[in-house]
Length: 360
Image (cartoon, rainbow, N blue to C red; front, top):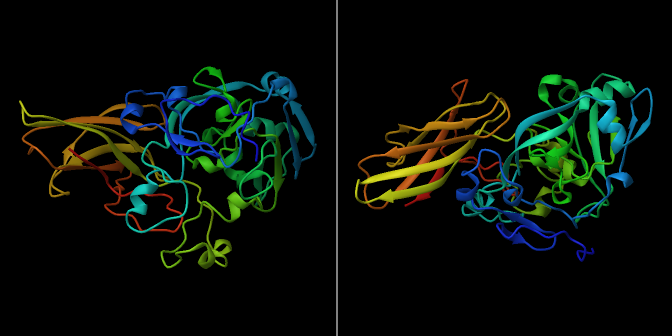
């Protein structure tokens, strides 16, 4: 693959793989912002980053629709009402290195910065599908980018159930703006999919084709990756016959991360700050921290939460702490579900959601 024409990458990111370019910010930098600045948005790629002019981009919709249509970017911008949603984009491999500390995993080694909370602007997918006359039923909406080569397939693809795609309240967008600016090429511009509440692997970048199908996307990244396999499966060879038996991940689990832990010796106190992200059962309602491995908990103050799909920022000052130790965090959602203390290992190192932990 040719990586010679990549756009300039942010110098504020920690590079975890050079080709394809995969990099993340430090979580301590992330939690300083409610909306993640472009230079701190992580980069997850399976191939070269391409740059395209809007004039050269089209979106074709076909399959189980009344009318196969090809839209220009101007069509998308002008034919449908524009809207905006604040939503957290999170890689399924966020915190993979922590799972890898249990036992070796397969995939890019990620710390806890593979998440970005942004304001996405575009048009609702349900409006576009309604326009072309989608045929309802037990169907899937498959998203494809033929724009760039991939490591494991000839194109990048994913899918979501048509039910999720067609519900207005799910805020699924065809997005062309990020934080009120044109969507940069590095993050999928001119057009990408935004699926709030769903892992980033489904948010196809450089989107050029949508197919309404009775089946899920046949693409490698839908069928043979981004699945939680049983812990008995330890190698790619073991996984050969298992992929088809396990569902593709849709929503990632309830999670929290300790991004900052600063000790103040003059007051024997600890300042703790981090983020939390909801699972599929409801938004984050509270976050607690513990300096004694869960024997007791101190409630944190939520400092930011925007609607249903954003991350939650939190902070707390803990009094009477020793000079050194480990602080843990746990998130609790609006239905009373509590973040797991531990997380079951899986070969791909995805969906890690044990208590957040940081030493001071």
